[in-house]
Length: 287
Image (tube, rainbow, N blue to C red; front, side, top):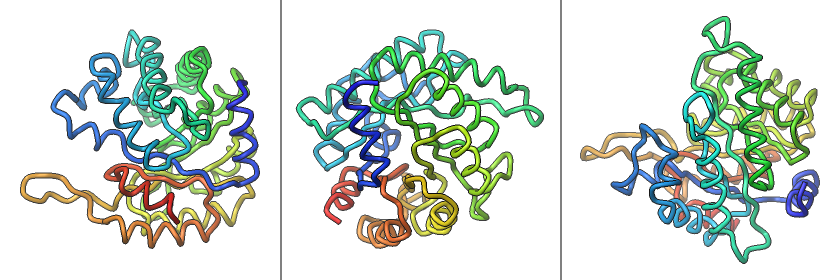
């Protein structure tokens, strides 16, 4: 564990308020060079664009910058190691000169349903996540975020892989439906708390799915069920089509009003997901 990771681990454990970054994908969509089909290849083809997005969040006040490798794993990309290395390099370039900024490895779902609903078995998921974690460690990341997970079994295998292969701070963050259940497995926040506590996550939380208004009940359930620090990264509401464009229906002012309530519930790791921009993060920083 590098000195930055040690410092961050202490800050998370003490429940110091830390500002996360905002959306990457919806910011990259603004650039014609970006292709959502192979989202992470832009780290290699146009690193300056990725670094600029990261830098916009650093300038807005983000403390935690998540490398643009959400969908990168050996099951999807043969050159996954090259992409992860580039993603971390791009994020690190954006944080240069900012001692209060930390760069994280982003681990999203493999992209296949877990057994028995699908064909991805736990040991296969564990092996895939292990390779991703080892690559992140080789590139000297400061923390690991396991995010947008919709299956408790997959979350468990990802967390086990991290804990078995490094001592970096690690957060698990799941995406819930409006009933407070994971989309595939139906697990609830209490189920995820058990996994987080059993396998040693440094924090637990939720991201994506919907805006801070609908995320609030999930954050409350997490905060009431554990003493672990809480991570909250909601979308800027729900997407709507306006004049042929997809826009999100919660503006900065309303977003901040709800985020105040999320903070009051106990969340200390706060940021934004889809549809949020540096403007949202700057407003969070100023709370």
